[in-house]
Image (cartoon, rainbow over all chains, first blue to last red; front, top):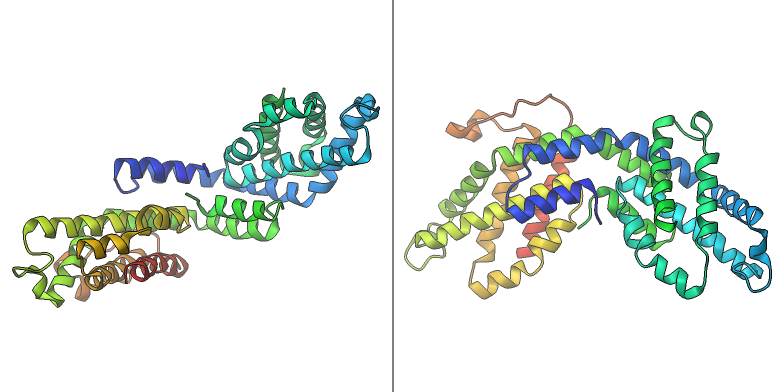
Length: 164
Length: 184
């Protein structure tokens, strides 16, 4: 799993040297930013279900045709799966906030997503809409501190860019 | 390879759950102790060659047969290999201490080490003894409990802020113990 610490250790190991001052400084820089990340991860974990529901509702409100026969949300089972997938993305964002890098999203969310969605005939637009809604709905003093929100939104943008 | 952060992510993913408040509290502890941890890694890396050479010397003093003809440290070539291995083990322990997780030590150093030593005829008992001396001196450097009486001419105290680092000393000691139990 890629993170600042593992990247530093991998590089040091490839060179066969002990962790250098540069390596320690890199880790320290990561640690200094960690408070905001962990706050965002904690708040997101606490509100994960509510955030998922709001995001899913927003996307089905914007694209009501999705619930028509032959579309991606034609029955309740399929609708539930859409909510489940959104929950997965938000959970992976929680992991990214913990690790401090995009490793979990890359490895477990984005790699192969395009191919899977194409094979299943799923539109990615509604996912983008749902996550955009989450991004624009989150606000600083109410949900989390501004710096934490900044970290959270940057990962939301990362998923949005990957899906759009 | 995992660190303290990705370890909690992997175990949360196994349960398909988000990383919750309990795990995050433990990670906040890692962050709060971050500077201490970096000082601890620095204490090991700055004194690495001293820690290694003292450990190998101690091992040989206790068992002088190692440097007599037929001993496993006998020609310089094999002695050099011994010093090199000591340094490699210490290096992976420093990585594990930096990451706050033993996976790098397990995957890249200890996996198959005992089998290799047995195949090469390296006495694992002596190897374990050298690691245990490294443990004593490394933990003394991290906790700054080394004394002039023990250190002798090589006595050195790291110039770091004084504080309670017993948790880090215990963590570092656990990595050395891991190596000892892996080879013996």
